Image (tube, rainbow, N blue to C red):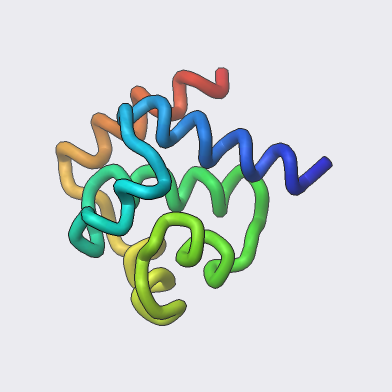
Length: 88
């Protein structure tokens, strides 16, 4: 059950940003799309940072941890609000 839900959150995020998991490899680390999807997965599923980092191609677990905890800039906050509306 939890596995399907975390996968659904990830897929909704990728759909929302009109991207794919494969294209995440081409994005720079800390791309706003990754930065918005990651915390939502963490918040909604309580998945380990390592799993989120692997799925979003965030690099090392330490980098993923920093990206998931850093404050969002104004653009990222707006994207996050729009993304969160998918779940309400």
